Image (cartoon, rainbow, N blue to C red; front, top):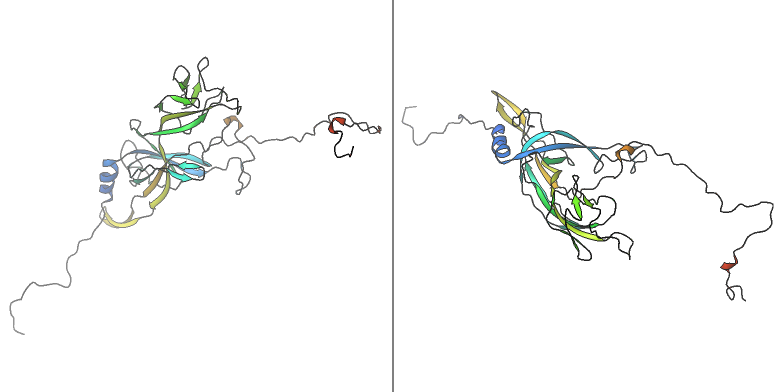
Length: 309
């Protein structure tokens, strides 16, 4: 066949190609470290304290006062992540208005270690884990308001530990109380009524303490509710070798809105088995078995009643 010049652009059946890879480190640096803040990760584990059987619904062998939501929490480490879409709204629930403030967490693959970023162990989250802001300078305070019952002689415990009050306390009689004079906020975030000051007092119609209203700020923390992206494996070129690498998780979190799901009691009662004693009550008056006289209270009988008189 005679040689002749090519016509138009030539296409080759086999051409050099570009092998694509995600730059996992750059993703962490750009999204997590560049825009994020530190979170302390507390891993959840079901509490077996006080249970006799795996299916027990009650803890009969002692008072479990160190767990919350039926879980034990262990600090696993600190990582830097970006919290997005932090929404707050109220929804109607069977127990009243609920505030499931949800958000999304853009995460790295590793914990921070020795002052570095994402240079520690691999992060493994699970639904139910707790996340606290790790930076003490971060303003993670959230406003909340609620009714409380006046209980004399003890600290009045709110839904969340109080950081600071935003408004004076007002009771059901529209009486306002002053902090430092009538009450104080304890280091645990509770309301303590001071002796010598004014207080809501006892309502004579109910025999209980009057209610009062408070508005305050508390420090928010979050629960992991779902892992939108959990196991994500991609093939990348790392150190000159093409290998499968795990990508970061993508988690949905919810801010705590029901704090006191925790048993109250003294920690000294932890793991103390109850020893109930069956005690037979003594008779009101001794009974002589040889006597034929049966005492009858005639005040129970009314003249002209069912007896026909």
